[in-house]
Image 1 (cartoon, one colour):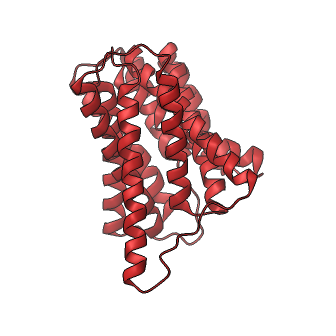
Image 2 (cartoon, helix red, strand yellow):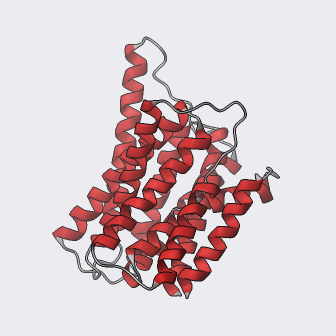
Length: 289
């Protein structure tokens, strides 16, 4: 039960962080907003880690750093694939593969259960596809490049979960700190590359910054704090339960985004997404049993 609660907390807060980060990016620069959220998350983890006992080891730092690199590359490929489209196919593809990779590894390592366990996993995987489905008018079949990027993104995001699970249990928040340090550095490097590329093209190297609108800064801070909560919930969920269970629950993160979009922005939730949300509730109940 505790693992399921932590997994759902991680998924919903990840989705909420994406929602507020997305709102901030609409009014500012996507790249700088993402970097801002990462910096807030790093500061939050540094502050939180002061109160969490931890044994520092080379394994904890290396594994955490590797997860940060995998996550940064995975998110980059995700954004690239969604830019190519269609989102209605590539978004759920990424979410599905991000769950399949750790589930396969977990089962390969001997995680298993009774028949109900596999039924719950199956229902959860279907829910991931339906919840992540974004209806598009006139959507066409994705090209090989878009599919390849979506598959690579899902594999890398799934690998991030696997690596965090592999970190020593007594390492406290060190794996998350290493993850965030590497991912923040990667984002800073990406900003430098973008500025350099703009300069080479003869355009202004200046990037659109975070507007000095209080609401934008507040949304960046909220997204960063939610990201910290999500990461901590997932870390301790992995330490208390099975990798397979956490993987499918975390991959339901779009539920948090669409729920807030419906409540906050009054966006219409598609019927197929409602079915996915219902299946997610059923799968969570079955996993809790």
